[in-house]
Length: 139
Image (cartoon, rainbow, N blue to C red; front, top):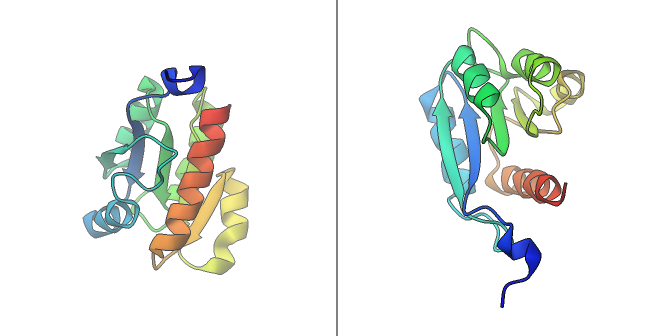
């Protein structure tokens, strides 16, 4: 018989992946796969190429995590993360992809909960995403 936590668990976790570069979106989704950790439900991806669509999707709700590319153009993910944290309530956890490890201070400014630098390291990205999803599921 499933416990209460399992009964309340969503069937999938919806992860929004924003980048103006389709290759970056593909790299993120391939790095994470559909089921990155046995303790979490499978992931369902929402690929987004423009900032206005990101805002619309998060305003509509139902997104468990947003991954935003800091190198996206014309709207970078760091500024977009700050805007979302200021304007969307409730805002899901945000992970930003930074241009380099030294940009971690920008991720902190943006109020993103996590940052992973380019080039995308599948192990580092998965660790950060699993941590964010576990913490948000417990909340």
